[in-house]
Amino acid sequence: MSRALSVEIERRVWRGRMIAMGVGVLSAVWFIWSAIDFGITPQRLLEAGERLLQFAGAAMPPSPGPFLEPILLALAETIAMAFLGTMAAAVIGLPLGVLAARNVLTFKPLHFAYRRVLDVFRTIPAIIWAFIFVRAVGLGPMAGWLAIAMSDFAALAKLHGEAIENVDGKAGEGIRSTGAGRVITLRYGILPASLPLYLAQVLYFFESNIRSAAILGIVGAGGIGFQLSERVRDYMWDQVAFIIILFLVIAAVLDTASRSLRRRLMRGA
Amino acid sequence: MRTQGSLHYWFYDIGKWLGLIATSINMALMATFLGVLAGWPLSFLAARNLSPSPTVSLVTRRLLDLLRALPDLVVALVLVMALGVGPLAGVLAIAIHTSGALGKLIAEANENAPMQAREAMIAAGAGWVTQMRFAIVPQALPNVVSYLLIRLEINVAAAAAIGFVGAGGIGQEFMAALSLGLLPDALAILVLIVGLIMAIDMISQAVRRRLSGVRA
Image 1 (cartoon, rainbow over the protein chains, first blue to last red):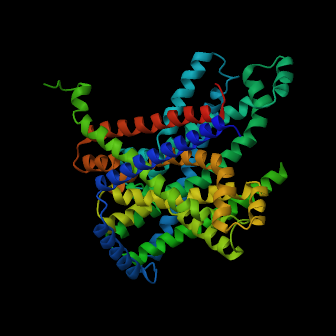
Image 2 (cartoon, chains in turn orange, red):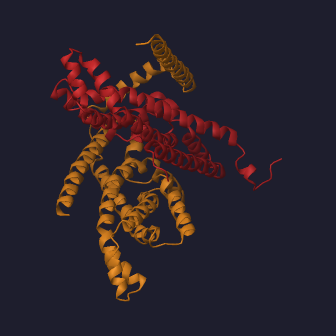
Image 3 (tube, one colour):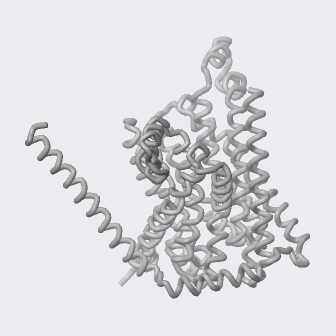
């Protein structure tokens, strides 16, 4: 190896080390500054640890207390919220999704503007909609399912639009050649191919909405989250633990159920 | 003077609110950092073909599932009772969820890394930690970075929302305004939160497009 090359290599290694060190120092400064900003002190962490141990002690054994029935009812309410919200979003998203397809709404500026409007609705999370609807329709599951519907219809519309764009155009062409209008073409040439895809997405959304519906209750939108947040505020830790375990079991069951359902659907396709 | 009904009047406290938005973003950064710190090491124990023993792998995977299944808002609700109101509870709650989610994804990336480099290191007598560091980490790194960016995006939205249970940042200010009945303030903050989430969405889309090399 020539001397010049080895000097060059040494210089590059040195420079790499300096950069790594600089990044390290900067992140350390950022970390310490943030820790101070967030009020993280060893004493506070120790106190919190003690309190958490107390909570854990009070949570043993987890039990629903005298409230087994209301808790199970709230769980059913959560699932109902997710179902109703997803169905509403699916029904609204179906026609809006047809419009979201590039080959249906062919006027480009309008298509672009329409997609951006859907994006706005898509990015606002369900929990923020839940706040708005709790104010508008009061505490309870009504606010919950409306929030789910509002946060999902645009996402479903976008997915349906993409499904329609990817449909093979030959069936539509064939129907058009017989003199059929646009609506008939859509109905018999495109939707039969796009609907199964759409349905799969709706199922997937339903599953994830059961999870998010459980959270919406924390801001007052009914269901199991409402029961949970009330009990946390009242220090009823055994019931809190019971609800959390119940939630984890439901999540695990959902996971297995949807995985096997999806596998079966894929095999059928 | 501020004219009643003007934007200036509506967003009279914009300086403070933008500061709180910055706090929320910093909460997301911190939570992502802590989550990776916990989740990355666990991912090697969880990977089926890398783990020291099948039992360790199984236990770690169940642990990651558990961390992932707990919604961050629920964890924050409990942590606020232990730590008091403020951003720390939010950071820890998001970090817990992040460690589970990232741990699982990185474990899968580790599992899929080609094994030749590791076999060569085993043949050379390297220890387990050395094998992971020099044979697996470099091969999984591109995946890890992209998972990290997506998580960061998710966590910014989560950090904005987690204040709703008193866990710091802009969400907490929203709740405070709401409970004081200051509806115009609450709406102004809501507009800022939605703006933040949309901005992050667009930025991460642009970054992802650049990283994947697709020009659109």
